[in-house]
Length: 180
Image 1 (tube, rainbow, N blue to C red):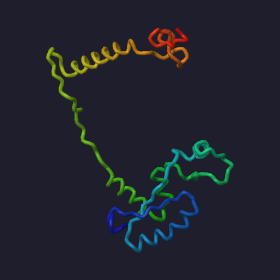
Image 2 (image 1 turned 180 degrees about the horizontal axis):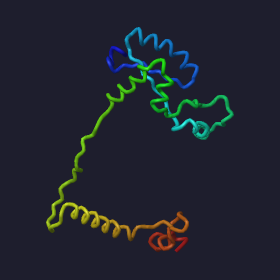
Image 3 (image 1 turned 90 degrees about the horizontal axis):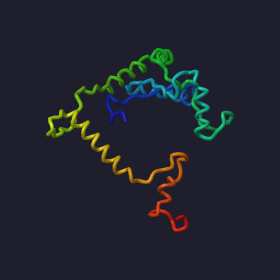
Image 4 (image 1 turned 135 degrees about the vertical axis):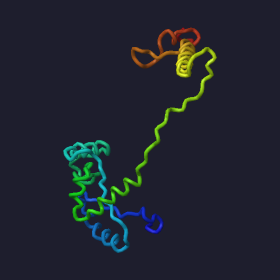
């Protein structure tokens, strides 16, 4: 992968207090240093602030049809909150280059859209209207035609939200022989 991605290949490290992360980290760091691959510190964020961990945990249970007291269920840790840069720097104080590389990646991903005026279709304005006036005129004309077409359309019963209105259902054209 390093050969394929070149200088865009990083070894990701996360510290959420999970035993598997702690067990894997020494090997990952060792491999990265041996192969001259940069480290990057990342943090899966599932909730905004640490105090919302319990609420998020309850929402996971609701989502999965589980109970908070169950041992075998999907979980995240209290460390899965959206950490600011200062907290990430403290967490990775022993590997400051891992935090520096997050900035490198962010710079590489930065993209600024050039601002421009909206491009609207040209409307022929035979009556001396400006393009915005013509667009307004055409929108109102389209709405008028749609409303006229809808006047004869069957309507739902506004009182119950179900069934058709009695005037439509009882009309001789639509009523069944049993109801006419």
